Amino acid sequence: MHPLSPFQQQPRLLTVISDTICPWCYIGKRRLDAALATLAEEGLAFDVEWRPFQLNPGIPEEGLARAEYRSAKFGALKSAALDRQMVETGTQYGIAFRYDLMERTPSTLASHVMVADARRAGGLAMQGAAVEALFAAYFNEGRDVGRPDVLRAIASEVGFHHGPSVKAELWELVEQEDLAARQSGVSGVPTFLLDGRFLFSGAQPPEVIVPALRSAVAPVEAGNASGDLL
Image 1: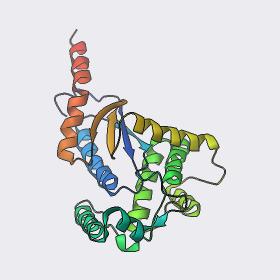
Image 2: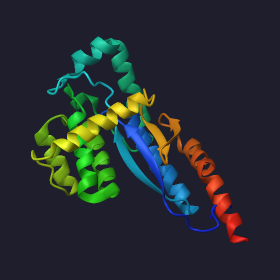
Image 3: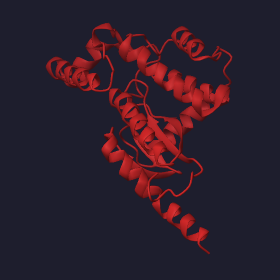
């Protein structure tokens, strides 16, 4: 156990602001998982929640043809180079990016609602499973995660029912959280908050995440340790 953690602490809330079709968010999740496993061995525990951010909020509900959209945004050569970079990076974390299977760039609003619904159905654990399943469905299998039928199928695979009767309040919540992230200054994802306070941004490697989280909880842990001596 790490010196800063003389006893098992209560979990702290770690918020990840991400988009469901952001490849670096997928990499970031794998890196975060590795970092949290290391910290758990030291007695440092974290509850992880996922909050929405739409990198492309202007995409229509039905999505866009990926090849055309990416060529317009980056140019065909740069788009291909970016895809190759992600394929190479993904292999380090057991992720098989299959850009050859991806026909459309979807709107991600509906998938964020599904993630929020997963939390309603089964708490943070199910929400995390839904996030992982969405990443895998889109990046590994090329499924269109903007389609309601695809989202319902993924939810069923995760273990909860996500039907067309999802309340309007849940859609409004997701839109409000997305807007709140932008208004707070978030412009890229993944972005990480600890107990509601900005921690760092970007898909940082475990060797950066681990000391960042240790330092963030150190003042509380040190105070707890001192209190035990009184």
